[in-house]
Length: 233
Image 1 (cartoon, rainbow, N blue to C red):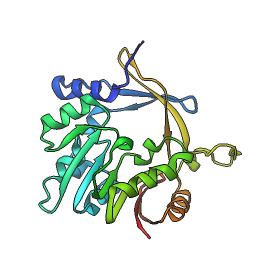
Image 2: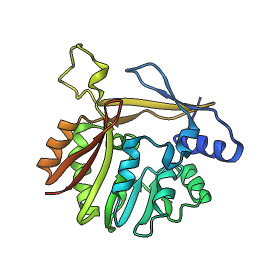
Image 3: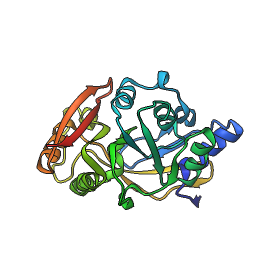
Image 4: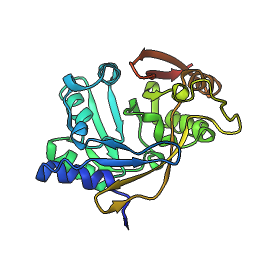
């Protein structure tokens, strides 16, 4: 297979321009293959799960939508007169479609390289904690957010506690159980492997506290997923 890191962008463009519903396949050495229906990335507010709806309702002021994909969250938020929305993603294809769909301010940007800007809300959805990659990078992530937030700004982030996957099995304490490794494939394209972090609420609260944030678990979904809001202590 050819190497191509913009799997999401390729699939998003194919669906948007040609109604191609070929799914993205997710591979992990830890679990069986799974599929992401590309049309799911184009849903309306009414079709989003409660955790995402609640997250969008909590946004305030100047909002940074991190990992915006096809722009569904940003499109909803920018219709609110009291919000100013900026959407970023590392996928060129995704940003191209987001702009074509009507997102007013979207650009290709690595969140971790963003600087000299300030926001009232940093929004990370669809297992938003994933981009952190590894648990030992959570401190750096929170400190980077602190640099980008206004004084009363908030981080709005969802994740899933993977503890349910283990039942009564022994969990290796050498590695945090929420650290996974993925590759993505789409037709004849395959991405490089990448790290993805799922957090449990207690661990997020602990790391938030030691980095100067209060963390509130605002709501919980039906599949061990939860929504957290972090603000400076």
